[in-house]
Image (tube, rainbow over all chains, first blue to last red):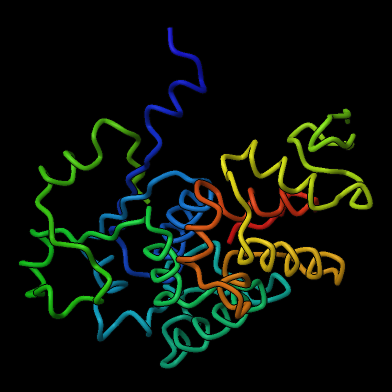
Length: 168
Length: 104
């Protein structure tokens, strides 16, 4: 039987899949990836489908939070934010910039800087999914320069090497 | 809380090995703690980071990797190289300050 410590040593890496492109989904993956690096755990961030917005040069600085059909969405002070309000033009941009302002107060970096922190650690690596890149007609040159490579799902599993995989 | 001997001095530490009384900290203690954490020699850069951390904590600031990377002393990459495998955890432990409670 392996102890918890032995298990941890063996899998001193974690593979995180980011498949969605809204601000909160992207940040969940970034916090997990950066947190792993901070603990000395190697992080492989595999970005696919709409998550690709977070590593697409043209889009990564303008991610939004979804405000329609989200029952947990509230205004500051706990005021409800019904879907009918969310469909008003410009609302999404307002909600997104409010959320970004709150994040900034907590010293949470913007997406680009967060990705830079992860790769600067030397133990965090960002990969893009080949199939999704083909679907969205994206090539390596369209992606953020820090993206290591575009992988097939098989190559991703090779890198994950039997270690834990988190799908956010 | 328990006591431990390090670098010829006796220090009080919490369950995670972090010093609970900063006044017991000195350079010999730091060198001893660094050795235990796998860092054989503390360079001038290490000491500059330690000094920055101690001043920040005394000033009541919450430490993050981001803040260290913008400190002007090290960038994020250098910070990870100086204190491998958990830079903020290790650097604070060696600096004799409490373990940082943040997520960034």
